[in-house]
Length: 313
Image (cartoon, rainbow, N blue to C red; front, side, top):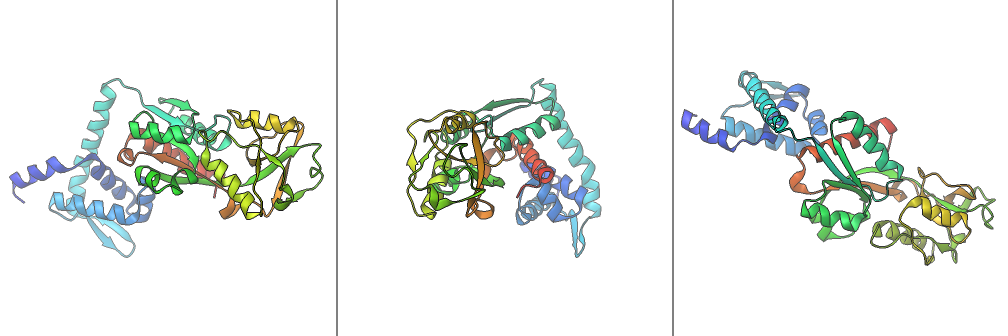
């Protein structure tokens, strides 16, 4: 490649390719590097080949044990490091703090709280702006650029092909779901309650605009048990106030296992249990064009670390 061609190619190299190169150079293993970068192994391989085409040289030797830097790769490495460091230093010089805008459905739910706790520990310099407007609002605000990411149920994206094509997402965990009912309820003395025995009970469901995917999850579970749920007429803004209604004896509800239940209520396992593939799948959603943006990358890293630390499925 002559100098003119090299200059033209360099103009087309984006920061993401350099970051991919540096992580692979550190790991020397495609699978581990792909996991760190939150991309598939084929996608990483394609991007490395793209960078090699720009460079006009092979940067890695592929072996049966992994990969090794070529002489060209070792020569290129310090320049890639300096380029990435220069961009980060330039952003820091602007004096702008890292701001991460995220919606959690309900500020009292334990799963997003655990991830955000990890995020704050790993990024103490960041200003984390947390909202709880619900999955319908999440989609609109993410597409408008007013929100970096949101926690919601898998049904919010998987049941609507239009939404799934607009938003990127990853599963955070599959959380078991139990029944919470008044302490004086006719079924409260049982340790495990057949789902079909709940036919005719008044079920609490949140407002459709908050988490329609949760409502669909509950309705689908009831349908599998052979009945249509009777919906309690009142909706509340949080899981805690919903459980307060159960304590008053006016309804029953399905509840994520990590959500504490208040005095006056009991938590019981269902038969069949809502665990494994039948559990509630939490997802993190974001705009696909912002996958490499620092707020999204930081959130996804916090999800990965929390999932590992907590042993989430």
